Image (cartoon, rainbow, N blue to C red; front, top):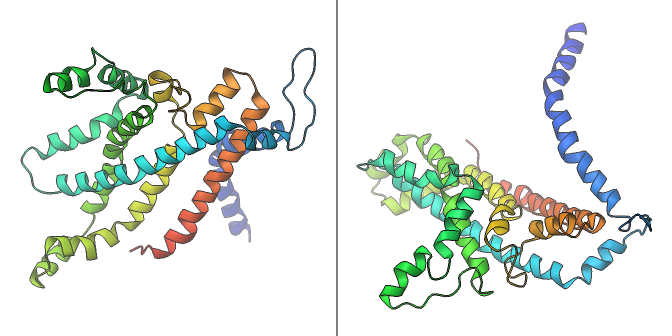
Length: 292
């Protein structure tokens, strides 16, 4: 009995650092944000008071909220499939015995190790009208270029392209690690059976990569709802909120307009939405995944 009790104490001691960090930086801020969202915005003359669900009612009538939510859904739909597909393609490519394979892997992974602010400044140079790299390359070819970050029809897609460029290399590392754990005997057996390379990939390689795909998908979904850095440097959400995403709107509401109760309500809605997505991902997709 004493040995069993000591093991329980040791177990709790081992997980206590993680539990303390999780409660301090995740659970407590979430609960605190929820209670903050139930109060009005206060000032020195009129202190905040309990308003119940008024912040959430105001959110439903806020046209900017619906605009940034739509932008975020477009951003997620534009970045997640493209970055995962490109990462898988790059991983399969650099898993082959190619000349200069190490250099190619480094080239693919380099965007990931660059700081977010540095990446935004690099692409700001590319997108700048008249003197930017894109204008310098395309205009001599007779191609008219828009104001990439100043045009509402191209601002969000310009940011989507940057995200795909940066995240594909990061996700490639996970796919490459998974590919290198697969037994070469599987490929040899498929060759003996006369299976083509595409058939082998579709029937053997890709199903074995499904656990990695689920992990990458969860990360991609989370990343698609937490972008602030690039928007702050490149567009500041403009023009006319055309490139603003929901987390940047929360940041603006809290630190530019100092409306912390409304920002807290936006945060709670975002957390609920992400929890719903996580439930769908783990509850439905994981049943279709086979772990070895």
